[in-house]
Image (cartoon, rainbow, N blue to C red):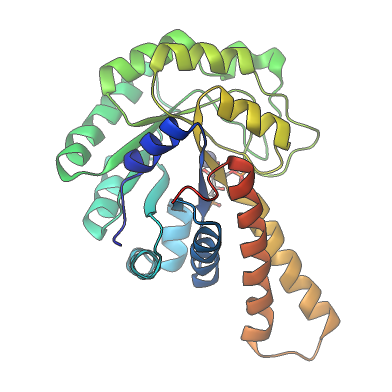
Length: 284
Ligand code: G3H
Ligand code: 13P
Ligand code: ZN
């Protein structure tokens, strides 16, 4: 099977009432772990690469590894650009063979975000590439956003309605209380806001910063229309914790395969658990 656009996967998820896991990859072992977990769970899956991951691994390697993974998997696999910030970056990914892109214009004004997203839509749609956009401010490791700050940072439902009507994007990433990286306490999600947004946009919603969000909150978000769930930090933790453990236990070890192999297994385990939590296990 070749790489598929996320719109196909999200339509199926909509019909089935589940979410598709979108897992960040930076290297071969994590690409292999995502593919292995998806195959073991009989689940559709999204591999995604950030601009940082593309810079680290090289766009040719990322695309080639994802293509190999997709061709060997008998489950649908998408390759998605995560948080693309410019039209040029999006075009490089489309030319390289990504099946889907995110254009993150959330730092711009609403009008400028709409204009940038429309420019991406005009280039992506004719070649069958799906587009995810973002509205609102999703917290980062350095930000400490509380529900008190909601109106300043969270996605405004009416703006979301206008944004989707004007751009026609395939999926919308929203800010409802999640943040990238590790949480200091337990995240509190604004489900009422999510429900309102979903009723006004009617397209699949994307949840970023989903590592560390408790299972019940994930299930409630899916019930309210989240169809793509992004996980990076939990994979990093599983992978690097395992490397650290192997090196600590075997300080003389110099064979990278003896360190990265178990880390790849730890990532398969973590990704499989997430796939089951998202309800996408056994769907293909
Ligand atoms: O949303 C951000 C992802 O966790 C990617 O992080 O830019 O460090 O690759 P990165
Ligand atoms: P976490 O690293 O918090 O899981 O967020 C991942 C993400 O949103 C990638 O876009
Ligand atoms: Zn994100």
